[in-house]
Amino acid sequence: MVALAGQNPHAPRPVAAYYDGAGVVLIPALSASRTVASLGPWVFGPRLSEDKPRDKRLNLYVVIPGKQHQHAGGPDYDHNLVVNAVTGDKVREWDIYWCFRIDPSLNDDLRAEHDLIVAAQQFFKPADLFDMEDIPGRAALAEKAGLRTLADFKHLRRKDGALPRLLIIPARLAISATAETAELKAETAK
Image 1 (cartoon, helix red, strand yellow):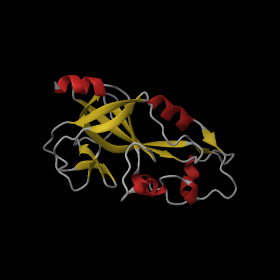
Image 2 (cartoon, rainbow, N blue to C red):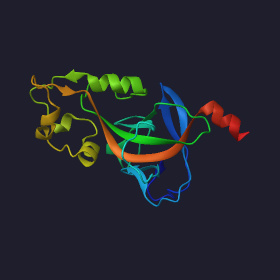
Image 3 (cartoon, helix red, strand yellow):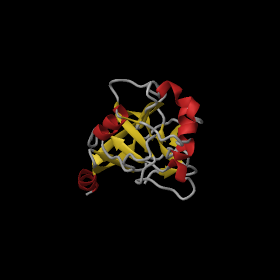
């Protein structure tokens, strides 16, 4: 479970995530950092000081909305976590990316990097009465991407009015963590 705000964010807490559709455990590394990477009530771990995305880092996608991490007090921030690698017990740096589902008909339980990239490259033509209220996770979209009205999507629209089904943007946050399969985690705990 992802740590909730108010708990000690400096202690590493296992976080459920997906890698190619399978469940993995993401464990943030210990850090002296007092700032944390978070979304609404969810805390992912201590932030790295260098937040600009880097090619050498692995990717941690926060897919909004999602079914994996839900909280009654913050349903606008319900999400899935998807990683693009399993590291075993080796600590690696991870760039965080926000993934916002724009097309309401897109699968609401994306669990693999490949599916995210394919969805981000696909477009859909919104219905005539399409409104911000039709976009799932619009509160997080407004907070993290600054997209509050349909006019804000102007730079994302194609000439025919189509929008991307999924929007992936850098969160400008990075953490250090391991990503282990549940089986490996159980073996190392013995």
